[in-house]
Length: 167
Image (tube, rainbow, N blue to C red; front, side):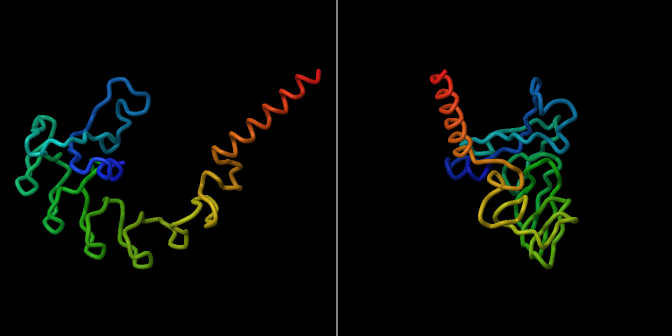
């Protein structure tokens, strides 16, 4: 969601502060493997917001902001790149920092998961691979778009109503 937020609020930046939950059904206890998926966005310059050292945050002089201890500064990219609480590594072929569980694939020409399938299409349906529809409309899953579901529901409702009026 970071890109969408930044596109909507150009002067906002994401802080590295990890939000903890006291009462959330999905994100509580030890469920957060790499840290919270939620970050705080603000238009206050990040160097003006100090994050607690006792929680593992440190000030990166190069980035001029606080970062978590896992978010190690990359001298090549010149940023503290981590977004999810893991220590990213630099890929010299991609010329950017990537998640530690990814490695460069010479076929795809990008960093991918180690067990990825190079033949799997990057566009279209993720389930059957067809380019004519997306996952939510895949005929192999029996799922339908919200518009089709609504249309079917209203037709079913109309049919039931007609049956009721005929009785």
